[in-house]
Image 1 (cartoon, rainbow, N blue to C red):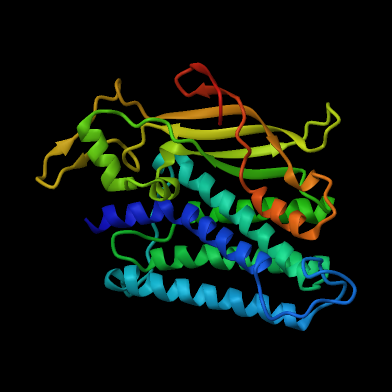
Image 2 (cartoon, helix red, strand yellow; image 1 turned 180 degrees about the vertical axis):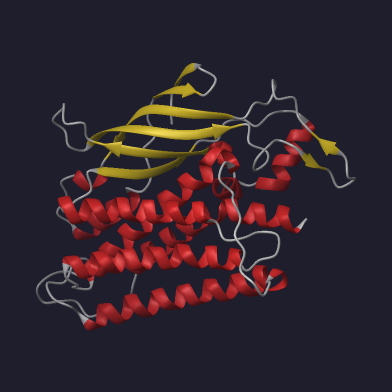
Length: 327
């Protein structure tokens, strides 16, 4: 039972962290109070030199949020399951690697948002970039450390590698190009769930029954995207996007589980196969929209972590091809 509960928590952690961090940065950047406006520009304009009031606001809010979340996770979740010695766990192959894509995405997004927030305080480009790297890895690594001291689970080297990969993707582009040429994005499309009552009960127990829960938990409705400009058309805001998703996932490694009565359930793999989905679609780079208002530019930068819905071609691991109206 402990292993099952920890499995559910672990596979939503990357998406949950990103959603919480997205909300935190949005509030911090768009609705802060008590900071004086600069005579050289508006509130949303990055400072030309280090502004202590902005730095204290960012550092204080960030540390308070981090401490609050850590305290809440410890007392509400980890405390009953802690062990004295750290342990590791090989979760490579779970959820057809969708959880790893979630970690890569989270590392990339968190590094970028912290980087831009640090630039807003007036930090130099290099200082802000390293702040993004440090903040991203500390946030991501905390969950892995807690998992490493938890009964029935363990520290995942694969998750850590994914965290570093996502953070490194953002850092490398900023370091070498001074901009992001490749974007990682997220989308969630609510396709109908199977009608089988046993499967629906399993979906309810794993992923919940409201849109917010399914957004964070259900890999069957998540897609992670790599968007870029191929250089063969003029509009710089129109991107080509490659996506990856999955379907038929009702367990980490396999679709088998026990009911509350102890009955082993194994759905027919021909009716409910575990498949990977690969997409070819279009996307928008909201940061390339020519607006002068710094508030809108900040807002577009935050919204740019989500892929814009567009028609797509879907290629499955079963060798099938589908045309989708929106992905």
